[in-house]
Length: 233
Image (cartoon, rainbow, N blue to C red; front, side, top):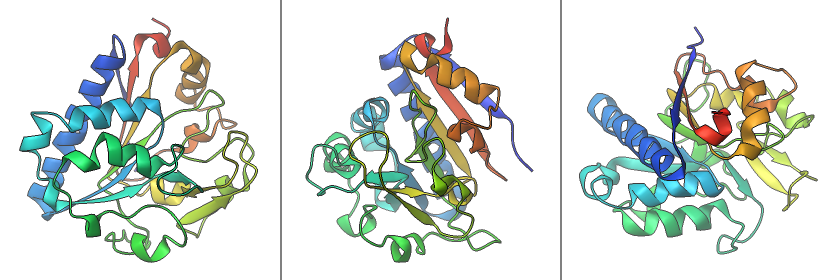
């Protein structure tokens, strides 16, 4: 059963980072209490960066059960891991270098990531069931590296889809597919800025032409944390 989306509107980027960090921390703690471990997929982009920088500071840095967290990514640009465009590099600098997660529990989305994704306990359909997946929203309504009109949107079996000729640089990317995203226990969209206002409005209307509209967890929570500029307030 698909859960309805819940939206939280905050004044600006600082409050968004705080709210997203708090939400994420609660779900990490809840996963540990229930299952003894948390499987987390991070996002790229400037908005998630604020959340990760906040998680890297007290109280979250010291209070959360970081050694029990396995880290993946919802998408990645096909660039070296130390490239400034790498989602892994951003998360490493913003968060992973500051919290006690063992390197062997961090799985960049590069090469053939399917074996690593198979480490995530599956749902009844055999898809990895992440405890938390972070997503952003592009001005064109894309999320992860699922762009309007992309064949990756139709992928029903693969865990990861390769994307070539993406409309945003760099053109070559990997992305979790919609069935994997929609298998998660909790999905968070972080959206900020007036440039995202139209795309967010279309997602809220469930415009089928907008890739982010197709993120609807089958048996999980869907949360939007957005600032007033994106919400049009």
